[in-house]
Image 1 (cartoon, rainbow, N blue to C red):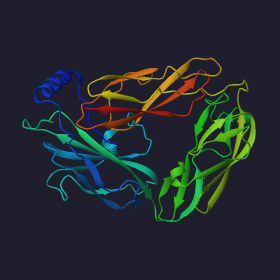
Image 2: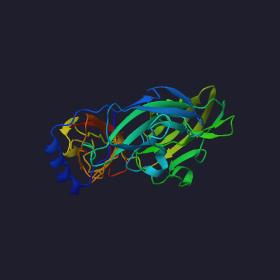
Image 3: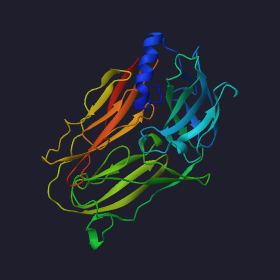
Image 4: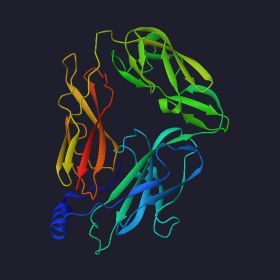
Length: 341
């Protein structure tokens, strides 16, 4: 999967005229050759990055970004995710060394974005990207698992204490903040399954939990959640006392995958999402693959964007989460948009 910068609407006519003048553009290879996809790296270490540029003209620099695998690019600050800016003067050209965060653990997305310029370049008004998923692991020993919550964890009116009383309906979800204490003195977030963490609810009629530590309130009562990672095991007592009116979680439907041409107006269609209880929905679109695209109406059923101009076929992935009137959330569901020159 690859990346490019989107262009302001005012420049679209310029790009169209540019393409008409020079005709169809050749596909210029641009790919990350190092690190390899699915390679494993140590947290806090430097890794080498390198590109295959082919004869791609007009590249002035390449920016590298590091995101957690399913992190929403629309909410993340670009400045905080930038890990390297490289030019032709670097070794290797447009590559170099990237320092992995010492607190990182799990699957991350390394994204390389080329910036181009120069009046002599036929692709001067285009941008090109590539991305790979890598695994980051600490060599340090996991000493203990803890939760950044009150203990026991109470929802609603449990025990007369309003701890998470904003979650006052069945079907609502809560992302459990699970932390690992390691022998190198670093505390790392280990909620996600790709960090090696597993979960077991003692009573799924009270709490269900998915593989990434997202709890769903299923019914009133008490239960125990067991969490494991490496050789460490810990438990968390949970008490739920919320409005017991039946409430089924909604279902997100982001529509079918689409193949579109660069410059096309694209609509992400979530109108087929529904609430089994017949209520209205709120919509939350996120972007988790490809270059960051200005998305219009990300909190509506039909979000829109302008497909960026590309020199090669590129894939952009979006997820949709819907919320019902009582606060119950669906699981995020993904859809791919493939953009061709």
